[in-house]
Amino acid sequence: ELQATKRELQTGEQVFNAQCGACHSSGAAGAPKFKDAGAWGARIAKGYDALLTSALKGKGAMGAQGGGAFDDVEIGRAVVYMANAAGAKFAEPKK
Image (cartoon, rainbow, N blue to C red; front, side, top):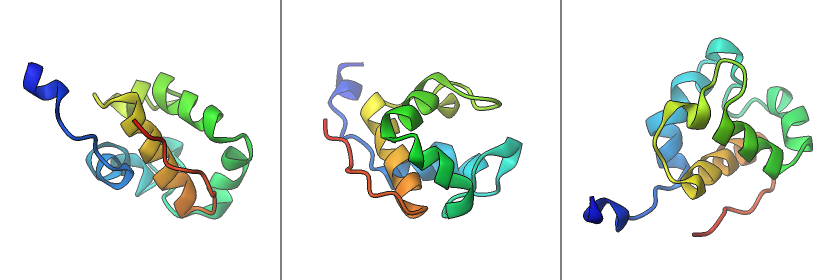
């Protein structure tokens, strides 16, 4: 367990591919599709903090952290990765 705490944090793209892409690639269960500026626009307008809160706590059919077991910073990086691919200009969160 101690070794697991020293692991390198995953990038937004890595978390997306491991966890988020299952729904956000296809739009399953109403998830906004990756790179779909129209679907993400209103969400981006609410800001990074609102998006992060939804990702961490869950929203609609999406469970907390999308059902994953990542560090909050890693989830934040995935949020930024997805939002920026749809036109946001959010800075990637640091450790």
